[in-house]
Amino acid sequence: MSGDTNSTSPDAAASDSRTLAQVQAENEELKRQLATQASQETATTGSSGEHAWRKIIAGVLAALAIVSLVAAFSVVWLKTTLGDEDQFVATLEELPQQEAVASVISVRVANEITEAAGVEAYVAETLPPELEFIALPVTGAVTTVIATATEEVVASDVFESIWSTALRATHKAASAVISGNDNVLVAEGGQVAIDLDEVAAAAAERVESLGFALPEGDLELGQIVLYEDEQLATVQAIAQSVETLGWFLPLLALAFGIGAIWVSYDRRRMTAVLGFGTAIGLALSLIGLRIGRNWLIRAIEEELQQEAAGEAWDMILNRLVEMMWAGMILALIVGLVAWVVGPGPRAGRSRAWASETIARWRHPVAADPNSFTDFVANWKPTIEVVAVAAGLIYIFFGPPPTGFSVLLTAVIVLIVVVATEVVAAPQPGATPEGGDIDVEEEVEIAGD
Image (cartoon, rainbow, N blue to C red; front, side, top):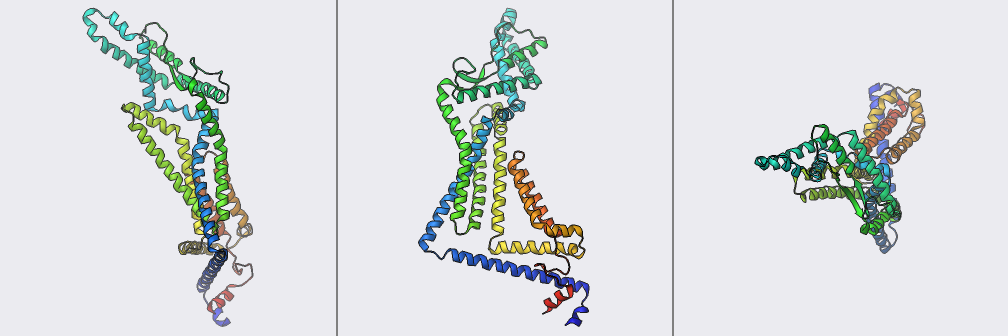
């Protein structure tokens, strides 16, 4: 036997070595499946009634966890958007820069200026009697000029400053009123509103700079009323509910999820159910948001206002949509990981394929070890744990996550883990358990 082994070519020895590694991997997988099956059988040895009740309780807790978690996304988004002044301004400050929104604002400002300044009456008085019939077209032309000038104002830094200042003042007023200090209402008549008179003044200055002398008079564009005094109690109740639910719902979802996993007989499967269930819930929420957007647009008759409403919807809810996409992809990853480590035949084939692929990639590295591969082999568990932990820290504590950032982070972590598995290949002459054995002995064992 020894003589036959010594005459074996290097390629044949390497092939037999890979065959041995594959057999060992399949044996380990079979042992793991048998152990899992035994543990499940042990777990189900209790009475059938107890088993049924535990399944029901685990299912109810899982459903409550999924519903609570999906709802928590909207509540947390609402809490952070309304509760934080900087986030409130960041959400709305670029709204007038959207083309359709800017057009709607410009048309409204132009109409208000035309009416407040009495342009139509002024034109009618200025024209000779024989030309009174063109008063209306001339007024329309002046209104168009005002709208064009207003668009330039809306696109300027002047309007950006006015809009940002108005948003901050409004947020401070709204926050004070919601907290119970109702002596800071912005407008007379008990209203919390965004005052746009400065916009009208800036637009009028722009029109006059073009050579159009507007009739003298106070230009009052009005306000965007957020809520009035008689709505204060309702607004305070809603705001306080959002403030409470913003931290309570995530904790409730976590408690339900932990309870479902703890009660379940098959905790791995329950983890997969929670992951896939949350992903489905968030997908349905995204579909609901899209349906709501379409319903809102169809309810508006004027085309320009439809476009403005769509742009406003997309900008205001953009952060919520990104949060939901990020949560959905993360939940899918959790579900897939829980499924892959399970005892199912497809999961087993997936793991076997991954093991065989990594074994093929390992062979060139194992044939030429060095100090770096030795280091990675010694620290492999630590490197993989740190990679996973760093990915989770970045997702939860880094910049606001998006679906793309979560997916990219998962891919990077997967690449690091796979690269670590490949580089940390067992050296020639070392068994997976750490014992020493040379290539000839491996071939001999494989032949036996």
